[in-house]
Image (cartoon, rainbow, N blue to C red; front, side):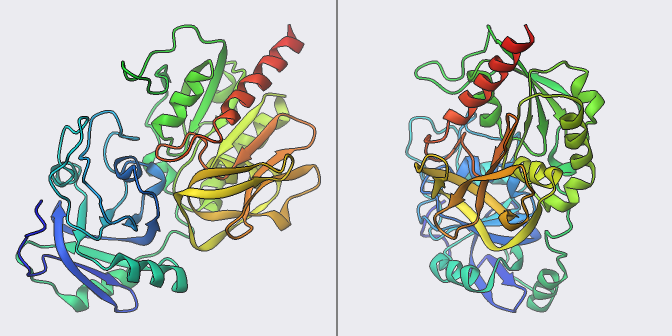
Length: 389
């Protein structure tokens, strides 16, 4: 899509407070309502748009050049785009990258997701930071005709993410096996042909690269839906249980996820590892509480301190809720903390190989500082098997 597009606005972003942003629409046409967040990553817009954790959200990209490397068949984190829409500074240009297989505009259209370009994203980001993540209505109409009162009313009518269980909407409909490992030059994604651990991964909205990291750490991965029971989990006789990332309010998803996790913990000594929403699910199961953040953490440059080693990791994050560290019960230790705002980023049980982190050690996009957590999970499973044998 050229920057020389007609000057007449073909898209409008309306905030619930009545603020309007006009721009040039691309992708699908129509209207969507959602929560608005911003992401500071400089790369990985395809992975971000297909991350199931962004269900119910329109993403503002603070980096101005979005679409310049196109899209390809390898970088999707889900089958189709999941984020409700995207807001960018510049209209996408003709892609220039050897891996590009399709233009962003066509890919969004095929995935039924709309976008708006030509927006002052710096102003929009400041508004999100100061006022909190707003409810918005985004409309793309090539005719440039907008019913502003109706748009603002739609934004105000959005129920918000609090109390919303979105994991049910993005989880897999049935169980499946996964053996694809992390991308490697020059052959792409190799297959795990000699696994040493059996892992059951609970899919609250799992990114593919998380499953690849588990496979690369030596796991034979079986993925189960978010609503799986402890009996269904343990029927696979796993060496460890993984709790995935996902969207929505953890308290809502916890209505069915927490009893399953508690049951697994009560009946077994299996290692348990959680990421993002999985971190929040584990915290709730252990007796802690979660809170809605002002604007959340979304980006690939978030510094997190390991409170036990003093090491600082640069991490990838995507969450609008957080575990309240003040509510952690006895026997549960805070292990990681955000250096941006001091919010909780990790916990572990004091006497068992059960732990979780708020950030994304699988990155995609983002730094690889925290991949060691998958290796730690594998080591915990190996240690338990050695004791059993």
